[in-house]
Length: 180
Image 1 (cartoon, one colour):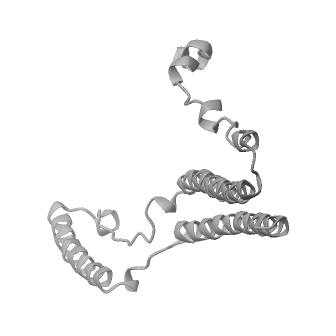
Image 2 (tube, one colour):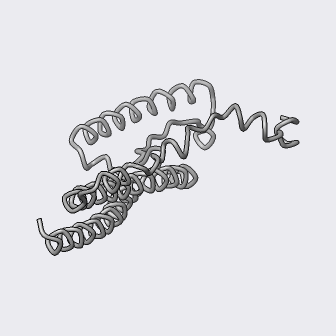
């Protein structure tokens, strides 16, 4: 492989790396938009045949129960204006009906997407470097130059796992936690 071919290949790999990172950012945006769509979803009982049938059946049961309640109230002498009763309603949302819960879920999704994107970008960059190293190896002939390609320490070596116990020992409790 000629020096010109190696140069051209490395330049192409770097362009692909840049495109891959841009694509990862775009994918994050698309995934967040889809998550927002899910959070905003409201389901109507008449969107599904099973839900519609359950809704109709529940309304029948409520109507029958209201008749029984009204009869008992008359027996007890409770005026109709003061009569207790049942109500029925369809909830088109679950946890996503609560603004605070949506905010919390959104934060979790954004944090997860950020981690996923960073991971994707790192993998793209790592593969780009591996490919470029392979190309450079073809042009590097001396043992000393080959040895230099393996000298960089791993990120895992430079950044070991955090041990929460070390933080508990080194960071004092705030007054609010002591009072709790």
